[in-house]
Length: 146
Image (cartoon, rainbow, N blue to C red; front, side, top):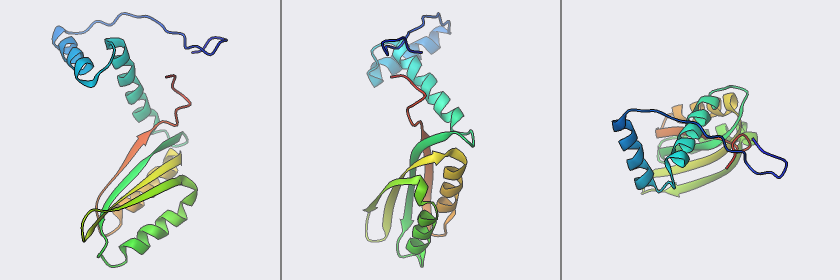
């Protein structure tokens, strides 16, 4: 929520939780460098909302698709390229890294409707020769205040 000057309106509320859970939260605050419990809890709520809302088919999301594959595998590079060309409107950028003589890491920065991105990611991850793949979903940033 914002006021007319663009400042974020904060709301205070109480949270009650078990002492052991509070101790664990305090450890997270210290270890991860949060300024306060409030800041840590706000980040945890954001993370949960991003994950939850990223599952909504028509929601616009951003994210990355990470692939590790054996580039010696027959036709793997042409297959991955073909899939990417089929979905060029969803891919903002790619990075290709040679991990060793056989293995490559490819990271695709993506943005678009959640359903379309998941469909493309599923095709890429399932391609024969991909050793590991993962779609990581995040927000476009428009729905969350800083």
